[in-house]
Image (cartoon, rainbow over the protein chains, first blue to last red):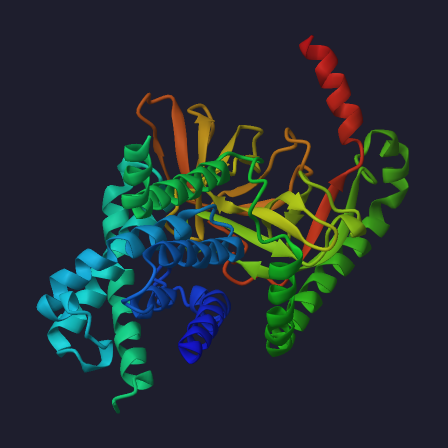
Length: 168
Length: 274
């Protein structure tokens, strides 16, 4: 339990620094940035206190917002992603989530991708909608959401593969 | 009563979600209101420190480029001095109306720069302890960068011209027709000048400079050149696309401009309005 806590805290800190110091400066093709820090929300233990999870996700978003000078957009996006995570987990993993015995590393590739992709899509859509803050730019919002999502999903899947522990 | 508590406990996650969501939307809206983003900004000790440290590494890697830019600017200034020497005897007699000495320049280093979002900010490594205050202008040797919006003791935040809330007075170089400089959020090299009257002789390739109507920038700083232009819906004003002289994606050192006479001018204008 204790090692889980420590690994989550260190993941929280490392992802924030990785995001604000490196990933925010990529600006591929002018505006496409990966938001790898959602990895924290994806990997947070599936069982456990849901209220604490919501609060920690909010904290993660606010920390990114302070660095980016973006008000509360990342906080809102993280919060929405965290809130609907149980539903998406049930959608992607079905029966094995209901029995609470899944490990992300051991799940079939297809359902893993669908879980990651849906979470990232929801997060990015809220993020860019709040960033633009107007319906006139709905096309630009969708464009940014799609392209950034693809970038993020690729990075998330790569880091899941790189840092997963298959044993046990 | 019991039922109310039961309801609250059963739905505590949804309630917490709604509460925190309201907070974040509140922060977002507040950030959208010009000059009101009080609570959250990158001009604080922790984020400023982190960005300052990261920038130390980055600056070292770009030393060559910065040196080259300084050389270029030195060269330009030297040329200006030699030009001045020729005309200095005439200048002296006209001196009573000249604007020299009304603006104070300070140097600062950009430690964080955004340009990919719709509302972009920069963070500088100088703050109130170096005499920097909100509403000071920020420029480089090539063009304008933005306006200071928040300061603390050691760091300052700049509203970039690449921000949907930035409006800066600018004009054509060859005539005095002026308009407002805004950004549509698309290309970080191209900004828009709106509300230029139809009578203005707008031509592709013409230079745009800052107008002296705001109290922030002195008149005549270079901004960019005209890329293309069109009339707006009312058919009476031009909307002009301007290619910036300044590469907003690559800014190292900047100058912060203080208008020394600002308060005096503002006082006079207030009298006018009454």
